[in-house]
Length: 469
Image 1 (cartoon, helix red, strand yellow):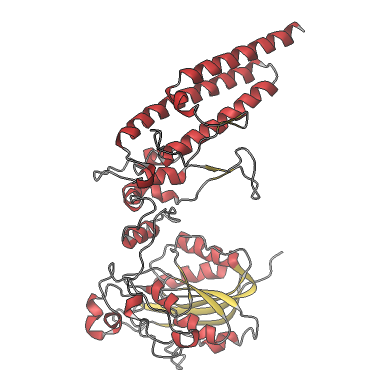
Image 2 (image 1 turned 180 degrees about the vertical axis):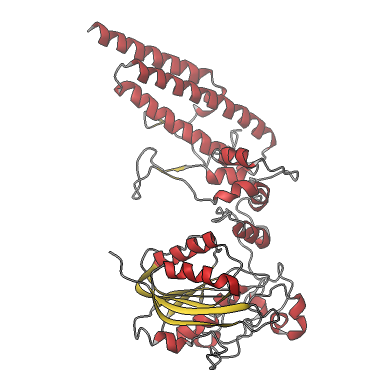
């Protein structure tokens, strides 16, 4: 009885200390004006605070931090009334309360500094200094976890956990807060990401698609979401009907040309502009007026298979798939005519690849080679790849790519490797990686690659995924 009484007395003392800490915190004076809900959330901060009575508009980053601390305080207070009197638990509790009190004071300082410079919440701008200095690698990784590596207020706001509307209650996903996704390499490209995330909230986005692709290609993928409106072509016209759009040159008015060397579609297909178009992969693929998928018939010099040849391997079974290539959708267009739906995964390699795919009525998938494919396991009937993966790729990266393809390809699905090329001395090394998958070879061809060097080979194959227990 005496021990229980001492425990209750100590808990009352801790509660008194906590209240005293909160009362002396400068931020408490500001927050206490809002509704309270104890113990799940001590203070319910309203993000749409009226400014008519001189209240300060909280920047999103501070609101998120305050919300996180509120949740933690609520749980700690609830724990205080439920815990036993073990000394270790009480000591840990008091340390956490002290941490929260110090954090609140730090936020108060940031709030006072922010209120001097912030005009209003409706005109919130995520500014960033021009003089960027990237931290060392180890420091960047440590700071990334807390968001300190970034200077843009908008990116800090984005990466902070987002509690549910009913604080402490789990949603249908089984979590009480959502943490937005962002690529690990973003921390090493903080200056570029700060520029990407510097814009006026609820206004037009900057014209910075080149920065976005640079971030994606260098591993900052996925990119964070943004709260700005994407610009569209000012004279956009309705697209062609589906049957006509597959093989009709898109209108110049439906493409934003600002970030490309070519400023009209004729530049993309003209032989006279070949040296200044800004892209070299798939040099002729913007010429979509040539209906069909032309494949040389001489097997001794051609490493290609025809689409009909491949589809005949699985009559009626090929329905959905992926084309992983630098493409404007020719492969997907032919497959569409054969009642097969193909998503075309490509980047804008100096030209509007993704825009043209969409204008043809096809599905562009804007992903980098280093990304995990956004498909569920064992779902696709076919994966086709050409001219993206070849002798430049390292073995370890190739393994990650191939095993991700294996993940999304259904049992008995087809992996179509189309004209993979490399130096002769490297071909055996690459073939070992394809064989490592344990797929059944249905079509297989290795032929010389006829070019100026003459020391490269083409490899093409159609492989069937096995059923694994």
